[in-house]
Image 1 (spheres, rainbow, N blue to C red):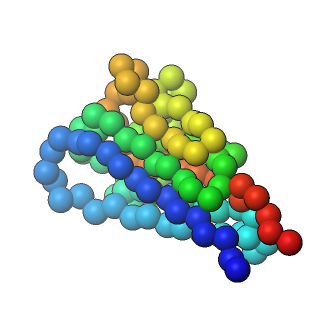
Image 2: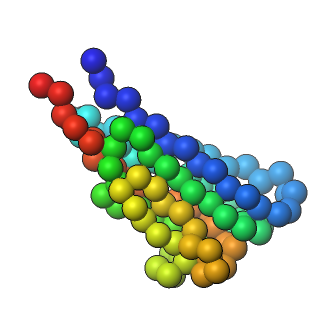
Image 3: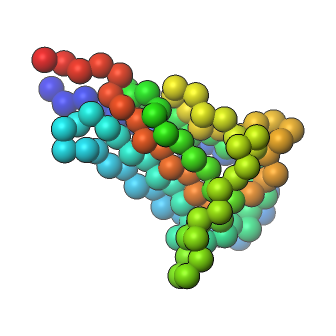
Length: 117
């Protein structure tokens, strides 16, 4: 039986620009690491985010990063300041009162919670 991992992204925002976003899910060859990436391919989002959370199930987060601007053409990713978001064992989320309402990309790398023999 293969492990099942999920990545759920929830958010609240203002604006109605019909932006297109993508989600990419991946698995390492040994099935021990799971990746979840959510981003706007055109780089910067013009939505005004009031909150966000990406939560994983079936794995524990080893790395999580949020970006105010995603790489596009010759530009690089621009990370949020560390005080704007938090990473727990199961989620990457905004910090109320510190988050500046800009989000264009989230990256999560998680490891299987348990391994079946």
